[in-house]
Amino acid sequence: MKVNFNYDGNIACRAILQDQLEKLDIKYQLLDLGQIEISDDVSEENFTALQDSLKKYAIHIIDNPKGQLIQKIKDAIIEIVYEKDKFPNITISQYLSDKLNLRYGYITNVFSEYTHTSIENFIIIQKIERAKKLIIEEKLTLTEISHELNYSSVAYLSTQFKKVTGLTPSMFKRIVGKRRELSNNEVVKRQNNPDIL
Image (cartoon, rainbow, N blue to C red; front, side, top):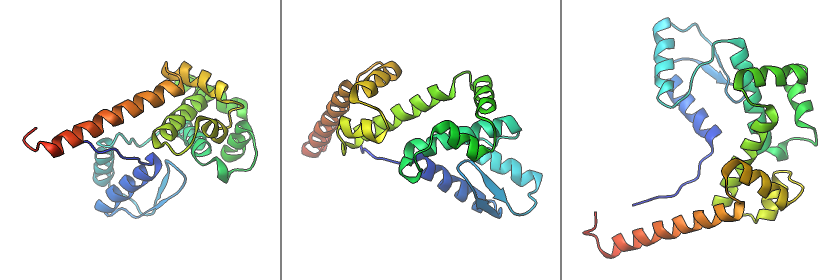
């Protein structure tokens, strides 16, 4: 049986972190996305165990300052893209400068140097990922999605969507619909004939 589901990656990551920290009886406080504060000294053995347990979920502890900065930049961008209603009308460059207390020029240089892409490109990719999620959820029209993601028009969203995915949003929506239909047909087939494996 196929089951479709929706999830919030940030909430899932926080839940995994909490679970693993509590298993090792490590006292902590969740801070911003991608950051926790450990209250007590942690033995090297427990810290290694934490690193190993998090690796199973593709979560890695970042131990160099520039790597930490890159993660903070990514988290801030994801936060803006997914929770834009919580933010006043402010440019992303101003928001990142204020949040990280660094000049935007420095932020972009470090980001490009370590990720081999620009902040602008990372923002586009995150917006398209969000658009895909919204299309799959089928709660908003393409016009509403383009407005939600601050695109000036559906045509502009479509151009960037196609550049990133190779498909227009309409094509993507049709493919999702077709897969759902096939999946639902498969479920009905199995319900009508329980002998099918």
